[in-house]
Amino acid sequence: MKKFLISLVILIVAAAVVFYFGWVQLQLPADSYAVAFTKTGGWDSSVLKPGTFIWRWERVVPTNFKLYIYDLSTRKATLQASGTLPSGDVYTQYMPGNPSFSYRITVDVSYRLNPDALPQLTRDGLLSPDGLDNYYSSFESGLLNTLEQMIPALVNQKAGSGSFTPASLEPELISKLSSQYPNFTFFHVTPTQFELPDFSLYDRARTTYTQLVDAKTRALEQASQAAAQEQVTKSNRLDLLRQYGEVLTQYPILLKYLALESGQNPDSINLNDLKLPASPSSGGQASGARQ
Image (cartoon, rainbow, N blue to C red; front, side, top):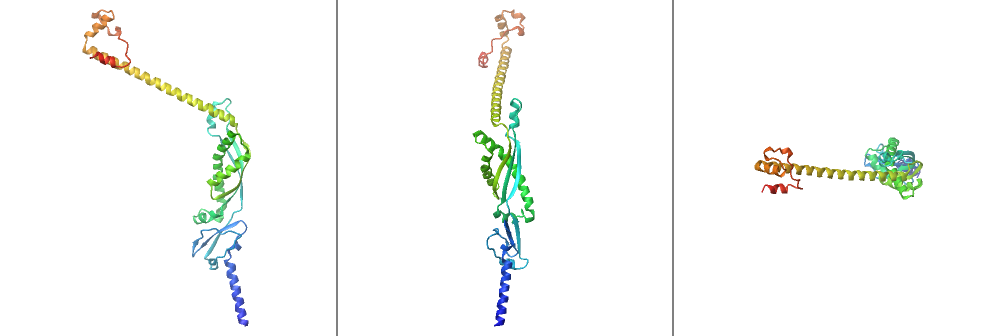
């Protein structure tokens, strides 16, 4: 009986040790998530989350199980987006005083990498626990560039509708950023400081520029039509003179006739003194003269 109890205790202790070493959850602090890799099965396709019971037999086998643990606490960043409203540098040249259409906006952002993105990022070598800070820094640089492109259009749209307030931007910013960065969750994207141009003046400058461009386009079209018409007229005139030359070459006696029509002595004809008939609108009449 004593040996049985000793054996039972040994089995219980062994089972407890096995259970303990296989209990993965004990290694996950709060706000931490993990991706498991085993030599026997490779990468896990799902993330290991805290607050749930996780037991893996692979962890009992020495050197077989490796856990990549990530602290996914909410991150906060303050980003400053600055730039000029679309074509603002062009429009300002057509307004008195050359007003500035530049802006500067400070945005507080709180976000977190989605835990479900960890397995693929880790498996593809794009992320590691030691490289998480660098990954976030790179993400924030890209996020700043995105905000610099996104905010001017939103601000101009809101200003045009007369409903612009800093708070009105946040829902749309969160929605657009969530669509563009599906691997991240955005909790707050709050504009805090604004240096904005006069949007009504910007609209007037844009209208003025559009009108000037339209006027210049019409003027160029008219000038092109006039130049084309002048070229046609010159071409017709040259064609008419060529036809006259051919007729006079074939019928020299016409020179005397033209001289008589001009009241000159036929024996002292000077072609430079002859007054040719008025040019017809086309070469049709001259062609008829040869028939």
